[in-house]
Length: 312
Image (cartoon, rainbow, N blue to C red; front, side, top):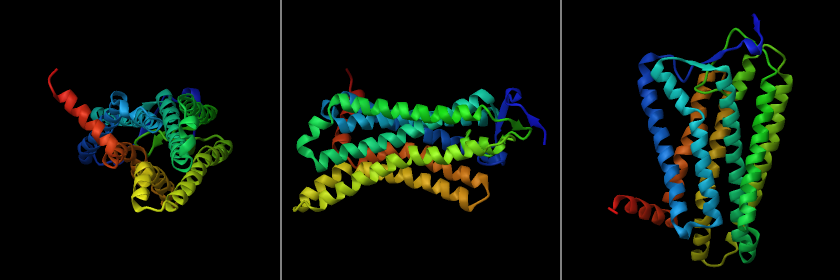
């Protein structure tokens, strides 16, 4: 195969989820619906937390940041996919593709860190309630979000800058609906050993440490809850972290599913379909999980909706 220097690469081709033109309108409708639901749901969470003074707490501060991050994460990929389907054009520029990779890594990494921070918040609230307000003060919660953002940006820039050193072949087709780091590395004709080692090494560090923190937090949380003598007290404790545990299970469960599908099948299209659960469905379902399982959030959303519906 002919090698093309990275500076000569002008665009990649996103093959999407299927080659069948008859299915494109259906795919467009489904993804547009999921995108709008995710945007509206997460936006409602942010507005409810902002306008209801009862929700001006550390837990809901992290939740509003998670919702904002979900909006950014799903916006990094879906609009470009929808535009390509409308234009019947599979191309994405080289710069646009690398930018998409960078943004997905930033917001995906930030989601990972925020879930760990939220687990730590619940750990302090349930296991050390007497010092909760002292430990989780406004300065610390802002610092934790900023630190998570910085870590995610460093993680994303590290991978993106390492991709810049690669040279690509004439085959620039990506069997996915978005630019994915692993797929871009596979297209390279130059040596990708450093990139592949970096992917596993950094993934083990940036994903492993937050996951360990979540497991540590919930191990202590569950242990503390089971020591509560009354069933009413246990139910109240579970209600404070049940939504977050559901979101954590959804995020890591779908992520593990994507990884498993890529290992057990050679079909990159099947892997792309599986990644929809991880990169689209999770962001769409998060607002429903937090609103349906949380009495305070349901009350705030009712007040927000009734306030916007009532005449001034």
